Structure formats: C-alpha cells, structure tokens
Length: 475
Image (cartoon, rainbow, N blue to C red; front, side, top):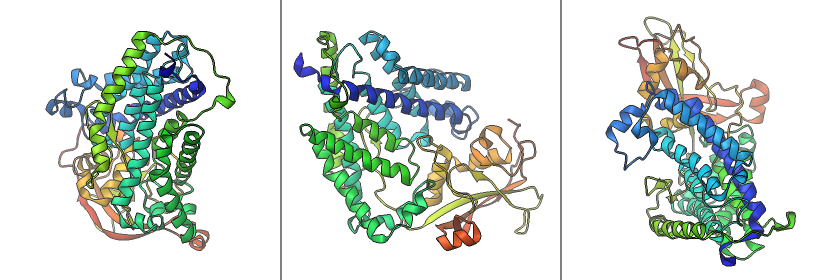
C-alpha cells in the first residue's frame, strides 16, 4: 500500500542501517574485551551469581540458560561478526524475512548481555541501542520501501531522547535555568576528552549561549520532527550539529553517535539519490509492522507519563526487553571534580612515607600530566563507574571491594582494563589504598610552566590501606 511506505527515505534507511551496525560493532567489541574482569565467572560481579537470584522473566537472557566465560565470549564475538556483516550490507543480499532475522540476532545477543550486565550495563545508551535495534528489525531491506510506521517510531524515540533530556535539566539543577551549568560541566563531566579544557575555558557568555541553544534543541526542535519536509530535515540537522558539538566536548560512549544515527532516519536525502520504485510490501510484512507499531505505542504509556511527571526519572526501562524506555542526562551538574586515586605499596608494613605507586586508568584523570584521550564511541565501563564512585561510595559498594582484591592478587584480566599498573601480575602489591582528590584544569599559564593538565588537591582517604587476608590463586 502506498500509505505504508515512503520510498524517498531509501537512502536515509541505508545510511541509518549501516551506521547502526557500526554502533553494534563497537558495543559487542567492548563486551568481548571487558567482560571477564567485570561479569565473568571470576569477575567483580559474576553472572552466575546474578542469574542464580534473578529469574528469567525479570532479565531474559541466553545466559540464564547457560553461562560460561567461553560461551559469553562466543556470543560477543558472534555479535561482532553479525554487526560487521550488516555493516557491509549483508542484509541487502537476503530475502526480506532473512534480513529481518539477521537484524534480530544482534538485538537478541545484546539484550542477553545487558540483562546480566548489572551495574556495568546500567547506562541509558544500552537501552537506547536495544530500542533502536529492535525497530531496525522491521525497517526492511532493498525489497521494500521504508515503512512509514517504523520511520515514525524512530522519530518517536529521537523525540523522547532529546525532549526527555531537556525536561530533566529544566526540572533538575537550577543552573540549567540560570544558563550557568556549563561553567562547570566541561570540567566535571564523567570522562573529559582532549578538547574538553578548551570548551571549559570559553568565555562565560559563550557558555550561557551554549546552554540556551541546548534548551532550544532539546525542548523546541524535537516537536518539528513530526512536521512535513523540509522542516523535519532541518530539525534533524540541528540535532546532528548539537550532537557533534557534544562529541567534540567529551566522551559519552555511543550516546551522541546513536542519537545522530536516529536523526539520519528523519532526513530527506532524495536530492542526493534518485528514489527507486519498489514492489508492494508483502501482506505478512504489513501485518507484522502494524502489530509491532500498535504494541510499542501501547507500551509508550509509561514513558509518556514519566515525561509529564514532576518526578521524572532518567534512563529507565519499563519492560525487561527494553522496548520503550525513558532517557535523559545531567539532571544535576557537579560543581567540583573529585577523583579516586588507587595506590599500592610492596612494603610489608604500610606507612605514610611508604613507596605508594598509583594505578593509571585509560580514560579517567589520574596523572596530572596525562592529556585526556578520545575513546567514544568505545565505552570504558570501569572508568565511568570510578567517576560515580567518587561522587558517593554507595555507587561502588558492590564492586569496589572486589576490584581492590583483584589488584592485590595481580589479576591479569583486571589489569588489562587499566592504562598502566605499577606492579607486574606476578609481583602484586602487599597493600592498596585509595585517596580522594579534587581536580581542576590548570590555567594556560600553569600548563605552559608545569606541563600539568590538571591540578589536584587531597581531600580525604577513600579506602584505608588494605591487604588480602588469604592470597587468592593467580589468574
């Protein structure tokens, strides 16, 4: 039926699908490389222990049926392989049903990972990838024109991502209403990027303009997604420009990139590509897409109620399949940056004047002379959780102790998560301590004179010197 399809979005669909496959690839690669020390059989929060107390209906996952590190690795690398195949256009070589089945595979595999990932997978962009990935299953391939209903649902997700983020800011920290949050944000965000200090040191009037522009982009522009072209394309372009600005200013995993991918689906690129003629969509396909649309709109009730609530919550899934979720970011902004520095010593009796050596993380600030790197869209899960742990020990209650134990034991998998360890795996420290420091960017003058990117001030001890009561078996 002509009302069911929109052939002018053929190129938009193609770009969207390839870009989404690239995000899937990054997500599965991170899972494959980081799971053992985080959620593996001997990890900080082991999957077997989790699935023993959480029933399948609350967290559906392949790993509820069977778990081993080897099986998890197989699933993660299989996800990489399927994502790479989709990136190269393998779905276009299959019949419609086959393409849909191929897109179903990474969604099911990543759902299995997220639903046993616990704290390490509690970020909003995990649910966003699953919600968008589920819609991609029904977007079709070269056999049919893009379904209008699925295109609408993709815009509905984009609307909730942006509008939800805008509302949580206006309802949350007063600095968003005063246009002053960016006086602090670029310095205190979870993981600064190489250009973050440049953004932080912009004049204050520029920061106020940034915040005002953000409010317009998140609270006004999303409504324009549901207007006719070319207005909807203009709205999507403004969102893409804003997200690229965020990409330059920090490391937010694939949140910004996936939002850009979503915005691409709203672009009318027919001027760059001659729309093709498609055969009518099969009846079974129309029935499936129509049924899924009705179901997702019904499930949208709770996210919509959340948007309208004064007690709006961010990044919450309302169903175990993560089909329709709430989103948002930075409802509050820290005024100062605090970092936990973990140190070890080989001295048998720890003293203040012992030879304490610091562990260096890949992304989070540590050594004041190290310039931050760009890691996004790759997600350094331990580094991100260390930022939360510095905000409050409550965020780290379940995993910080196990992390320290593994460092004391010289666990090789855990050490691979770090940039540098001052102790080799076969000669771990006798004691470990953790200290809390306040960090701030140095001025340009201080940077020139000292070469230090950060200046830090001791705040308090976070963890007193600790040792293993019984050395664990080397891993």
